[in-house]
Image (cartoon, rainbow, N blue to C red):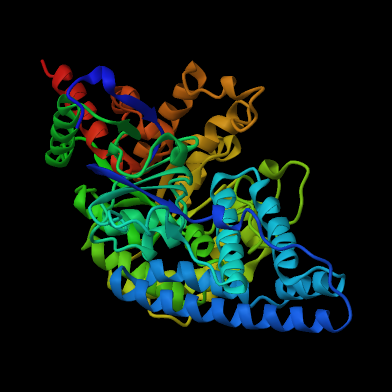
Length: 544
């Protein structure tokens, strides 16, 4: 450990799994081994031989993925195991395999054909203007490396594993190019202290695995494997996203003290503001409980489909939803119906290509165009309501008639099922719905303000467009006036109203929300303590 702070090198990345770890580095090589693969043209009998190689390699990959499914299910959980089910389904996809075989027929050897086809799939996903789907491109990349490993008889490895001093990741910080599930599961996660990568985001499959196994992790450190060597000592702060190379004793002590304060500062609920948690997967509900969330205020159900890489059956959905209701033990759970399209395109859903997807077939409009999806999800939610109260949130509602139409489909699809405590609510994300709030809240059981989309549509600004993103801001009088009107309307109707989105998670806005009468918010788990402390401060100041 360095004695002086001036000997340190501080790097800033993206925190993807919380916690602080200090240890020496082990460099893990997961992708570079395929930088040079044999490329040659084949013809005649060699074409059939290359096809046989592809067939054998796919069988090996599928077998390995099946084994990983079982290991992950037993070590971590069935939801996380579906990561490898999704990859296995890709390896069995006849269209994808057919394209590889076509490339071999065109004269490419097996390795070239596999790289050409899977690189094409990967680049298409990476070009999608949505972070979650961009990260799914890494699944294609990992499948490519698995297939090449089977063809070339290679495997991911530690850079220095042939050296006697190599610890194979035990009590080490793993540094690698990309945070893939292979990194999280090929190594013994009970022994690894932390992970640092150059690429990978918070919703990547491997980030989910890292959080599930409790390994502090930071991604987004450019050229991470080139900045350190095997044996370099680093500090990984998965709470802040900072990585410190050769940290001083003071830096280590400060980071550990801050981590202890954060762990001890699971802010208890405060009177006057209900703070619930946002989740994207059933496997995340334990984090909400640990943070003493007063419910799940936004369960983004479409992410279960994205994570599985396929459409989920009624039984599969019902199992996930019921598990969340049960785990929350009587606390409210708000399930947002599938909200796809717009900024969440997916090959799983036939949203089609649109000139302006934000104004296209998305949210409730999309579900009405796909009643089969709505009916299946409706039945799953009703089944989950047998175990506790289920709040159903209707996304991107544009008016009362659309809400009635959605309710009719929902009710007809579930008419034969026994129902528990089931409540239906409107999401206020579109100005037209806000202008019709009195009628909508008269028909609904509750309301939820989706602040991110409401700001976007109120000011006609695309926050994903760098030319106008600076104009995406809630700090405008008219926006707060609209929030005040919604709060007053909900109070007159006697209906609960909550708020989710970035605005809810920003503690600098908490006092203003309280002043408007907003008494319920839903935020990411990591923001719960800060919002509660801000609420406590605001209410203390308001006392005479």
